[in-house]
Length: 299
Image 1 (cartoon, helix red, strand yellow):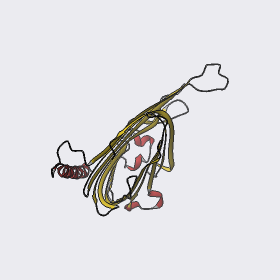
Image 2: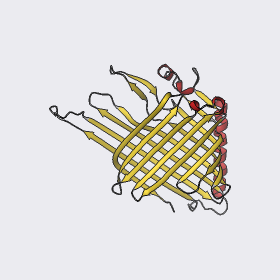
Image 3: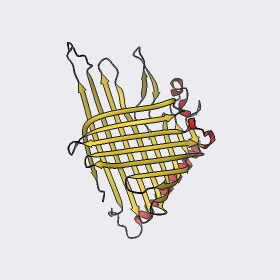
Image 4: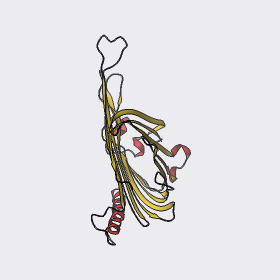
């Protein structure tokens, strides 16, 4: 298992070295950024509510904090491309009389090497990684809590080889008929509280799905001068267990409305179906007002 992971890691970095060699060739100076486009954004939000002990309308004293860091870097030269994306989210909420709980938690990285075949189609090889920062719990009525997830429990590393359709700069669709995925559960105690163990067999820490398909689509569009819609959809199907109930689906949605240059309202939502985690559909939603700083060098 470890040898398989090592082979894929070395393969990915080999592609990276080839791309780096291509970038530094043919009269490109180290300071030349002609072929690069990048963007970076970081945001903080804070919410607080307080009530006196005799407040007759009712209410609970609470404090909530959230943060987001996101970045993109894309290289284009002739038929070669290299796209990278990073997204980090974390939030907590504390209600009086309750333990601190998470309101958001995500680590997502994606890197894709592409070769242009036509105006709208290209071949690609990609790897993406998904996990969380902190431990996740179920909170019980008696005040106790049960550990159900943590960093790299689960964690997902998915590679994909296939074709990408990109008609414009706001939308892409990747179809990867060969998309091996590594699912990690590094804490052996998780299975005591999550019997499915996120699809990893008891006693193991890694599950490898070699024969699988991934469909990955993304949209990043300005609906107006001050309103942006960003969505990401992933479908994953293992050929060996192929059936409607065994196909994974995940949809991430973010809508950002700018009030001023640095103050914005952000609505985030996630819909997830993965039978290895839960037989039902999972969802989360968050609405926040805070500070968002964004810079880019888009042409």
